[in-house]
Length: 183
Image (cartoon, rainbow, N blue to C red):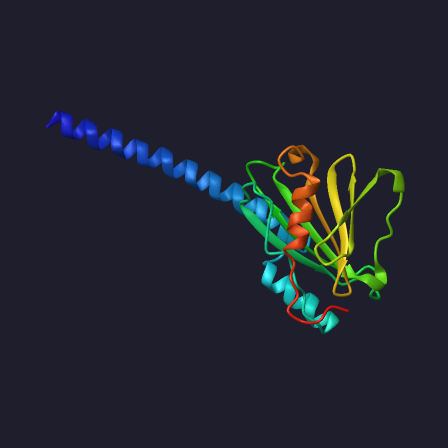
């Protein structure tokens, strides 16, 4: 009988301590997500819907992602004054491994970001014959390309550049397929 009581007591203490850790982890995760929601991120589908309604056209995204683990995906459409700085962003992150950070920014080609510092740029030809431009910054590696009157900028955190190469980003860019005629 004493063994049974001890077992139940130990089991109860394990459950209580585990529950405390679960509550602590849930609170941490909720504050992590809350911070992103406070700066305009939302579920990806909602952000895409906002972007498509604003521009009155469909947005296509690459169907491949980098081969690293992500815990969260968020989207944001920034609708600023005028159309010049309006962008869609999708962000893939890993709460426990912050270096696992991948993002896609999309804007109309009419308001494309110009590429400066040409000596730091490598060019790659995509499957559709168009050029993609790869550059490395202090914090990220970016591949910039245009398709269907959109400019795409896909990027990864520099800390995972040994796992995600420029060729990997080109492969992701090539996974973007249009079912309608490109302009």
